[in-house]
Image (cartoon, rainbow, N blue to C red; front, top):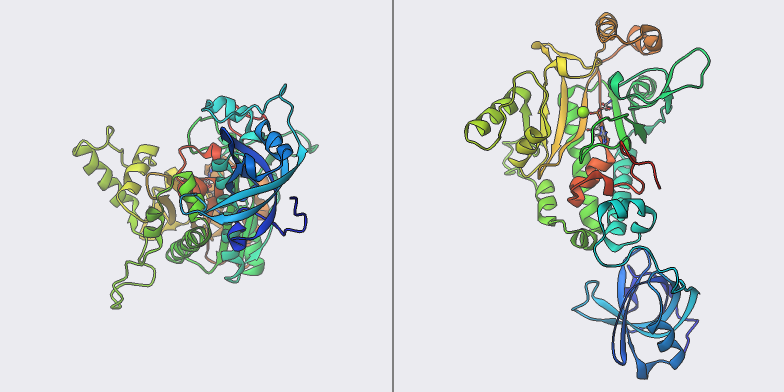
Length: 458
Ligand code: 4AD
Ligand code: MG
């Protein structure tokens, strides 16, 4: 019998109602039948659960409705929760009754059937693909990563300040700018990073962060690049490179901790080996005072990383020898990060391959006081940051030598004229972080609607 007073719950919380009647608002994800027994799988956005429907236990109407129900039809189900150790969630649902919200007609079946579909087809149907359990789980983990990232700064004395999205100046190199034709006299671009603006808000507030969409007119098709992605960026006054590396380590540790606290089932569904994440947050400090409190993530200079790559090439582990002075390519980053179980911080790259705003190392001015954090398991760079040039004349000559328009940067130079102080910051791309934490092959699955070189639909 329909029990409309049964409490409304979600699949994620269904365990709290073991042995009790419940109401579930859901979709039919899958349906198996064997004679007088139906096994529908329901999904509600928080997870999936299998229902059991013996013909003898329900009305004829319920049995017949469910038996011919089309996948992804929406319905409300009334049933009783039963613990079952074989079920992935630990529970099954004995269905008593149901009401349909929308039955998808047989003439227009749901486009994504459960058999394997190609990536191009799935990307064209991204608006529907999102409903499948694995894609939903990735989005749930993404939401937690975003929340944990903001929470870290919100609880460590940072103020969130929002930089503009339309900007007159390039931040990360002019070749990847999206240009807009709108303002009469000035060129305008979609922002590549909020950094330059949060340097200004940091001078006002001390410790700040920004969190928003950023754009790169990437001409390359890689597993790691999107044209539109979300970046979270802290900027801190009176902070040097060492302090910045401490901050990045503490920040990433917090994110991984939060994901492990609430997404073990999702990670299992996605296929991630959680022991790899546990290793990231496990302290390697022997506890005898011999290590600094921030010695958990390995820190390598560019020179040390270069030597490691040459050695790997000599041993036949890398096809190409790394050229000293060049940036690291994807295979190089993959090799370096695969040598460690924790994220690796590579610092002090040659200034020539890095951005104009990076402070030179006083001990070797050909190097920049910068850091790239490479995620474990070959995921490559997830964080890029640096100490910033704080001297007016040096910054001005950098802007000129990079052929950047001085007028558009005058406000940025002002920050070095009026009470300049040493300061540092970094940016983390949320999608790179999600790809690493979930163990995904390609960043296109890390964001609801990816934008790449050749994709704008849906
Ligand atoms: O290393 P990037 O270019 O650094 C900056 O933009 C600095 N202004 C940040 C700062 O210091 N405040 O980008 C930072 C991070 C990268 O480490 C990567 O995680 C991500 O942003 N990223 C991308 N993610 C997806 N697709 C792309 N095309 C990306 N480009 C950068
Ligand atoms: Mg970078």
